Image 1 (tube, rainbow, N blue to C red):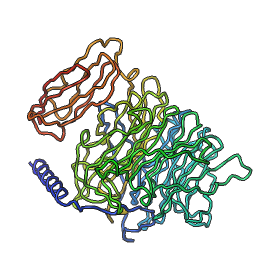
Image 2: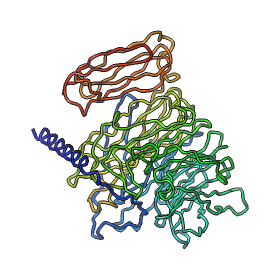
Image 3: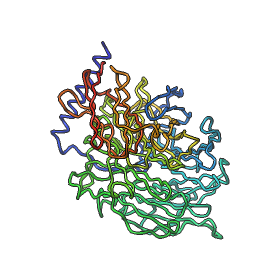
Length: 585
């Protein structure tokens, strides 16, 4: 009875929240960047005793997820203003995994810094090398040299200089002895919030921005020089606070740069450009998203990520309702977009929004989190798959109406032509956990037909972001995640045996709350698979994209729907089929 009453209360709250947001179009918040110098906790704050959480495995249609609490905790539970860049797998030695994760256990955040961790057994055990640097630092980012040695960067005043972006390079893979390379002085001010990329054995690229500044900057480090030092910064019209990402082509000849434009230049626009000389100079900007042209006030905000398959860039970025005045609407629907130049005419497509992820109201501005946001993307080393993880608001709220967030995972097995329906994979445990700041290795090694996707995330019992919302009394903990994905052959299963179009009966049926639908296509073409209620209203868009000939399966998650009869329909070319299924709760 108590569970039912609680559920009804939550439903009423969500309804009221939606109604309020619909009526109050001025419900907006300033887009505030966090530098890491904010001190919100009282000095008398007592650190709770920590007991690592034991999480159950989660099995979905796309992957089996395992969760390991690393023992790293923090009361400064913020990792990034955008999509974090905190974990990387060495594709030449796949058992080597590196993590660079931000933590602080001092109430005034005086000990805030990035902890470097290394595993040489595929994530089974970890060596903790402590903070790099040992003095206060913030907003970590990581990459790897071809040798497997870690390159990390953060902003810090180590060396007695003003706080700025600085890079640290390990002696070799997993040694934990780092050499410091500070960024050069900059006349406009010292850029912070770095993103770092090891291009080859001798070249490092870095992008950063000035807090409150009008532009962002790139620089490069030539390790082959007699006295290696970062070059002078080159300015570009990018926004601040980690709204940028670097990635390199598989042959290392091209460096890609994805970024949101500065508000003073083209607020909310998303651009991509390339360098063919190790980040020294850059080619022309390619406009991926012009929010004024789109006409729905949806613009690029904070979360974005970039990887390569061969020489082809693959990007994801979030869109939310924004204004020229520098405000955003945290409770309005948002979306995750996907772009690659050789698909859909180079026009970004929707990867995730309320059509395939349940829309839950996010009534409180919490570190510029949208209802669905902060995507992170990875590409398999054999080019067969792309993986994307993202945050999404859940149905759970704290007492002060801050939304608990969860994680969703999706994959493409045809080079980005189509994406599987996102699945919620974060464990449903009590007390309810808030999962934020997912980071995924930009490359994922493949063994046969199996890919192990490596991720790291921060979670805690209290919703929100501590530096924004104030004392909460609970520790955030670092959780390492593995997603085991079995890759279909050539993107499909049993391709040789498929010679007809078919729509299978879902199983199980009746079901609660999820069921699997299998279908087959006899030839390549666009496939649309949707679910409707008995009144003909669309409740889910499970598949919408080009599929090669073969057999497929997709999971339908009806956890947000009511008991009743539902109809699912497939359309591909001249083929149309419809079947019924029963949800029983």
